[in-house]
Amino acid sequence: MDLTLLESTLRELGEPPYRTQQVWEWTARGASGYDAMTNLPRALREELDVTVPFSTLSVEIERESRDGTVKTLFRTADGHPVEAVLMRYRNGRRTLCLSSQSGCPLTCTFCATGQMAFGRNLTASEILDQALHFRRFEPVDHAVFMGMGEPMLNFDAVLGAARRLPALGITHRRTTISTVGWLPGLKRFVDEVDEPIRLALSLHAADGRLRSQMMPVNDRYPLQDVLAECRRHAATVNRRVYVEYVMLEGVNDAPEKARELAELLGPDDFKVNLIPYNPTGMYDGSSRGRIAAFKFELDRAHVPATVRLTRGRDIEAACGQLATAPKARVPA
Image 1 (cartoon, helix red, strand yellow):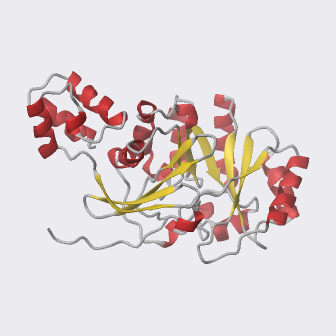
Image 2 (cartoon, helix red, strand yellow):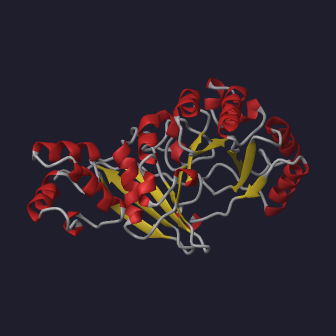
Image 3 (cartoon, helix red, strand yellow):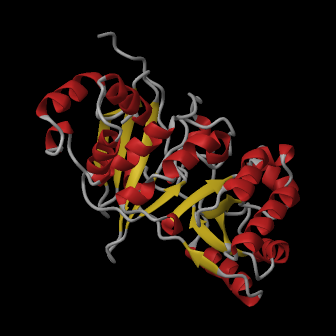
């Protein structure tokens, strides 16, 4: 829902200011449309149905994995593709993976999104409508901005959406914003975000030369500068920064690479998430044994580390797999 359009429409209709909050509260609780908003006059509901689309996104394809993960391909009003994911866990947790851009301009070699054409930044309402779509399925309680795009390239819209997630049942402490190390946005995050939103760094190599081969952004914003900002954030909020590290066979998964990573990060400011590689065509994923050996080195150096549980791989919904070719709009 375009909340700016909603507010201006209600104002033009001469409605009292509290109407905007009423509509938002219904929407955040999972209402299926304006008809469900029974404390609004019927005539107003009918007018809003015509003038303010209930979602800024249309659903094009929806697929469900064997493990219960749901991936949805949306289209923006101007035809850009966006994918988002609902991950269901046995303990009842429901996590949303949200996109901040249609495509991504940063071309990380292990990520399918970076290989598709970049469209544009999403608005805060378009980001929020991904979450609201799944909220209409069922209650949700966690969100990660790890879908399509680099969130720090779209800082204002991402933060605007994140600040509204508590109304859906997702607290700030259960919200994580990820970055590859886009330094201008990262600095703003450290300086401007007062809420206890988690920070994650997509790192994937401790060696600068190797990281630049995998992630060209490293040439622009060197890792040491990025880590300095992450440490500043950790010191400010007294919480560890998550480090995402995708495990690529023969590339970054040797025990010596783990020792390099441990020396780079140290034991205090970071927690490492080791990510089994989800095939996107360029690399092979590390074996379970290689991942275990890598984790052993981190454990020995007292760097907290876990191995991420892969969800939705069979529907290309897992980490690094979100991608779709742009599709021309069909004239009405």
